Length: 229
Image (cartoon, rainbow, N blue to C red; front, side, top):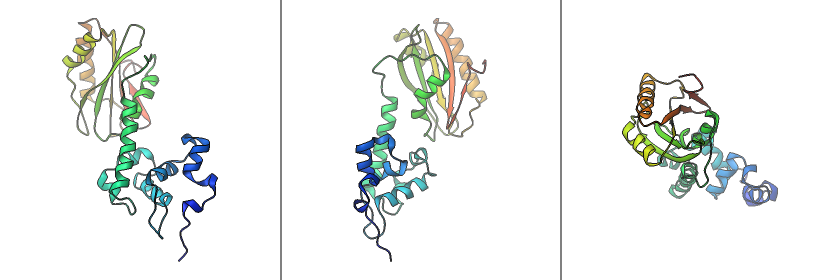
């Protein structure tokens, strides 16, 4: 049996950690990034890189797929014990929390694409629905970004009173509702359309404009505003 060539025996420019230090994390492949998290292989059988490739395979060869793996899914992979699984899940959660953290500097949004760029990292990997609301001032600056509900695989129910209470407290002039469809279907359901109409009509009573309702799926989105709805 051919001996496994350890990563320390690779040329320096091929080693993931050294490559990241010299070229930056963005230069690494998904497998190389996972290799750094996994650290060690199985003695005499596989390297950390081999295990990283296996983890990617279980995630459909995408990091978004890996983000959906559970602790049990990960520990079922040969070479991934509880410690390594925990580190992978921790890295995924850190990425998600960074994406959903309160805004340190006021951002402005003028198109659905800008909103999607802001919210896709938070929503696209979820296997259940979450609904978020962006609160905007008169200059389209985001003065708040909050999750208002989470639900099941097919739907989530929003409380319009809570959304408008927060909008009034923040003195918001406009709001944008954003939620995901885990099914991958970007088209709004009848429930989505009804909730949008109800929120729009209720917001008008407080002189607040529902600027858009955006549905995000993996690689696609639907904007009520862009579609004239």
